Image 1 (cartoon, rainbow, N blue to C red):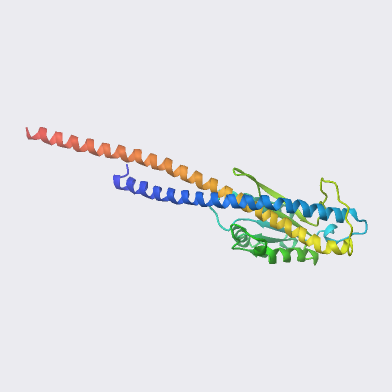
Image 2 (image 1 turned 180 degrees about the horizontal axis):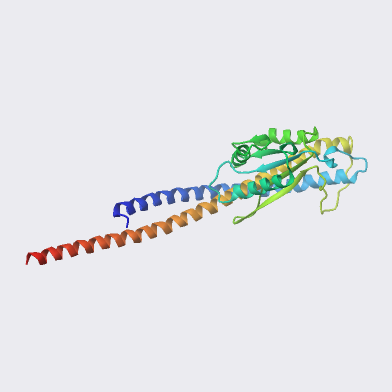
Length: 285
């Protein structure tokens, strides 16, 4: 049996750990509320830009754009959104596992794909496996703005337009609720699934539908990526909040268990001392 000092040290260290995890839970709860609000505020903008883009692209017979048409696939890009750090349960591992298994299944050579990593955890994961990471961004804020990722996103869209790759898939955690985040695969480019369920609106084009699409389609693709990042951040904070709550609860259970062991050991020590005193007194009689 462990000594009283050892058990007491375990109780002390576990209490300190529980204080840290409780603080992290509270920080994550605060970040989660803001991230959830940011993600929800972005939805109306996404719905409107999709409706306008679909109305122009599908409502004009003369409108054409390379981003709207499929082409023979020689190389595929995978944009993977992860967190900057761990301690978020299976948040990072789930999305990385799906992306990695998909790449392994679809491609036999590194020449057939490229990886774009948003987040430190994803970057390190793919770099350690010597996978073809062509773009990455780390140090993403807990409440990111579009300016934080603008350059990387612009490069991604421009690389597709220039033919560096022929299709772009995005992997991220979709926020459902505080206790549910679903790993999602979404095809971003080409924009072959741009149609909406809403009725298309008729617009008068000035100067022309094609020139408007030249500006609007890259913005729409960039908005898809930024919207997924906001969605992922809400999922990340929810996952970390849940993970830290579980860690705090487990620490409390350990403290209770150690306290019980400590009390038993102390009781056994007291009983042993009483027995020795009684035995010594009896020997003197």
